[in-house]
Image 1 (spheres, helix red, strand yellow):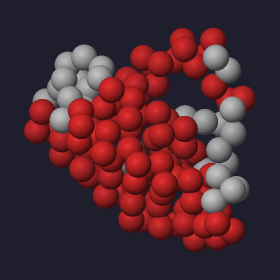
Image 2: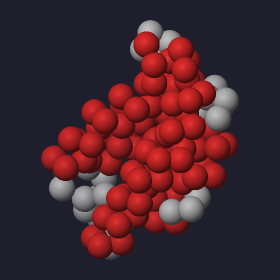
Image 3: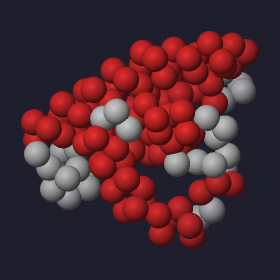
Length: 125
């Protein structure tokens, strides 16, 4: 399961980069790519995560303890949903809210990593 989520990391990063990283060519049309993300990619990703969490019945994606699989996905979702410097975090959170197990998992991930982010200045990357 951890390998499965590690493989999902690259597509997630590449999709998010289209509307968050100015050095990507797709960023020139960031509004278009953001629209695709919130209407297609993110709901599909959340549905998959919701299904895994429901099937596994665990607090985390792969076990009852946090694993690298959670970090592979959680850090990128957190970057766009719990980041006041990202102007559309509220839209991302609204999409995620339609998936209660994902919303709960992500909130746990945010809480689990909060101390580290606070000490390492999360919003100053």
